Amino acid sequence: MGVAKWLLASYLFGFASARPDIPEIGAYSNPVPPNNNDTVKFGPCDVEVDCPIYQYCYTTPEYAQYEDAAGSCDCYYFYGNSGPECEVFPGGLRPALASFVMVLSIVSFGLWSVTLKQLMAVKAFKARSASGHVVIACMIANWFEILMPLSYVIYTTGSDSSYMSHDVLRGLSFGLCVVFKLGGILEVPIMWMDIVIKSPGMNSDENKAKFKKIALGLRILSVSSGLFIIVLMTSGNTPLAAILVLLLVMLCIVIYQVSSRKLAKMICKNFFELGYSPDDSKFTSSAEKSGHSAAKNILLVSNKNVAVSVLFIVVMVGYSATAKVPEQGKGVLAFIFIHLFLADLAVFQAIFRGYVRLGARKKLQKAGYMKGSSQVTSTSTATTVISKSSVEGL
Image (cartoon, rainbow, N blue to C red):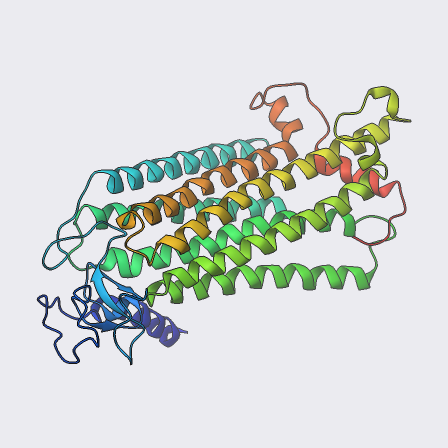
């Protein structure tokens, strides 16, 4: 195990020391670009780490001047680098934006800390439960959300001559953030499935085994995806990492929409006929009203998740379309897109923090940590309503 850790550390940190030295403009005269294009300043490359520090591997047609290379190096316009050796940092918008997003992440982490303290005070936190997994995963992800913009602050202020913050900290923090963030996101549908699997008609050994396989598969997906993203980021394939995140977000949308709608229909069979805000006269019993309320809460969480995910997709597409094209605002647009993505993570945190508190609101209200009248939790209501009915399939 120690050897594996050493190899992984050597692999990741090796990229920081593997960067070539900064050459002078025109130092790469052999081979000469076929068209002798003035755009090509620092020679051929295939990925970002083929270039010296402060430079990026561009592959658009004007940079694809070598037959045996995908593109050529130029100043890292994403960060606004310029100068004879790309050593000049513009300051201004970039470090300010990264600092603002970092502050948002710190505030989010503080709110999670308060929530965890309150849940433990009212004995509503169980680390081994699905809701406990959501809290733990989101808090750890939140920590890496702080480190990600921190790496941008360090870079854009010219404070990292070793380039470690860019080549190592950035990739590690983003990849590990995905591991725990995706784990927290997928833990919510696992929590919903857990409710169903405990109900009469669904609690067979076969269904329990199937549930465990699905839960394990979703957790493996989050871990393996995050590790792959770390490899992509630290090897200079940032746009590919963005595309992978894009696909994962799309998968999460499908999982949430399918699982939430099926569970809502099981809790309240005529939910979609009644709508989200029916009159009390439409309910035939108090149990049906409680079931409708629980189903509504589940669907609202799913719909909020989809709304934030759609914004994720928009900013990831924007980043992927502008990251490798220096003409697109000289990198400013790509930098703004990636920080909109990071800021959007804070919205995700707020959604899940609110849902976790909703599940324990009866105890939190009794202790004075939440306003409003004490009501039955959505999770317990769902379990009660399902247990009174015979349900088939999730």
